[in-house]
Amino acid sequence: MSERACMLCGIIQKTSQFENKGCPNCQAIFDEANVTPIECTSPSFEGCIGMCKPNKSWCAKWLRLDNFQPGLYAIKVDGRLPVEVVDILPHYIPRDGSNVD
Image (tube, helix red, strand yellow):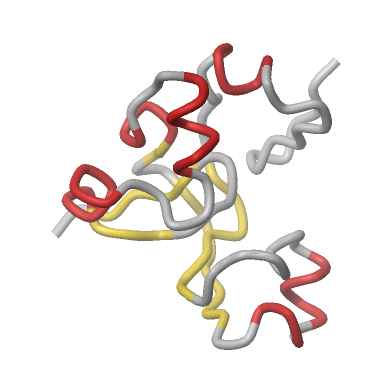
């Protein structure tokens, strides 16, 4: 089974889940930018953390995951979101550890 992580929120799912249902946190943004969920996910990620109650977790708050759905999240996701997505996000912070100018 191949798993991927969303480059915007970091949720880890099977490729087929992203293809069939999209990202449970970011799909509205991807639809607005007119990109597919696969374009916004990466098979290359590091570490993972399980979130049962993200709104009550200090770790979720530290990783900026506290407003997302419960699930398994990557700590770091390699790759860059399509320009169409970055352009509609006023305060985008990459999950690959780099800074955006």
